Length: 271
Image (tube, rainbow, N blue to C red; front, top):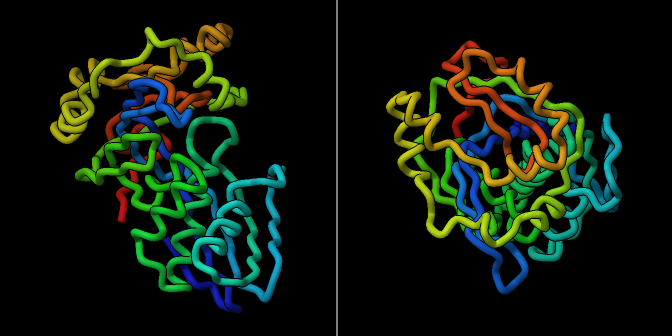
């Protein structure tokens, strides 16, 4: 979402995502892993104030970010791909926790890309190509809502948006490294087939709570809990009465799924 706020600035909303299903099919020859997942944006979001300027990159944030953060990387890769030369000022108000598996960095990148795409009239197909160069989850965030995601994350099939659900989130502040979590997977953990993502999507649409509970899966959850067994005690009192309780991404946030209005954050549709 892009809202002009005057003085040449625009306010961007950058939503978090959940992995309602996430599995790894194997390691590819290029070093990436082949995944299959059901991705969903939720109402938890960061806010970015952006402005095109003459030169250089300026970022102010309410949390510390590394120099090679996804926002700066997006600016660099966008200019390289399009030949456009411009500066960018960004003020980031971050609410999505870092290292949580909620996709905050990738969502920020996609929000910047959508904005630059509007400013410089870049087609969606070209933006998707740029997004895949920035990060594996970034293409999904150009769509948002509900999607089947495959490949290393760059193959996004938009699905009918799931509505009528909400979630609560549980995050202890443990930073979970995506690279470390992938390195912890062993070949016997790889799923031999694509799983039942479409069946799970249908269960959500039909409000089949038992089926949702049966089919929901995240390959990283067991790995994460083996690395951090202390989390199990904290999780015991989380998500009472929920439809399902599980980890998102490679961790370390967990979510408890409820019907609409029972959780703090609702499912958000896409473009």
